[in-house]
Length: 300
Image (tube, rainbow, N blue to C red; front, side):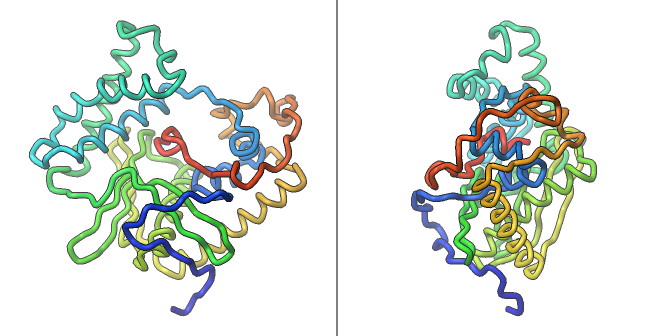
């Protein structure tokens, strides 16, 4: 191996990651800091609540339906059965997650009916991209972890992991928005490279494909990384974490205004929009900086 940057101390394949009371970095939180350091602070340090949008929750429902679909026998993985899973998945999710039931006035809300139908339409599009009856994933919604030489712990969830009989690995991620423009596409590929790096470090294999499936418009993006690229990416993650730690010590998490601000829940507290952030609570104890991704993060 010619590039030895950030080798890892990997988990043994098949082992459950042991609980670790120290910081971890997820692709979502790394993406937040790259997009806007103040957004990272609001989410990872202040942990300010964010009211989920219907679009975000719909994405979570679609992800959960696809996870359940792959638990069915392969002949039963058909569009009608996927649609039949939408309502029970929503019922389970809204019962388990506080505040989600408030998105609609009740089970008889006509907007709920339309919303559930829109989730079904996204699932219909999924079947135009691949036939799940012909696939047997190794895992769905898989937690993965790896530690870099620097000590940085990487943690994330993969939507689906496919392993061919010859050992080739494919990472699949479902997106329920439209195929992205340049900025959003770069964020999505950042996320996929993160997963690919963790798999390289834990399995010693570079994924042969990183496949993004956009269910709103039926497009798919396939990327093929190589090992030197992923080793360089490890250095990028180390640099991001070093910048996070510097900001954490000083409390200087600066806003970075962009067109993505239109979707931010915290404009009222942002200096770029005339707001005042809450008093900085100080960098949390290590066990409080988990880098954990929520299901809504993973459904973006």
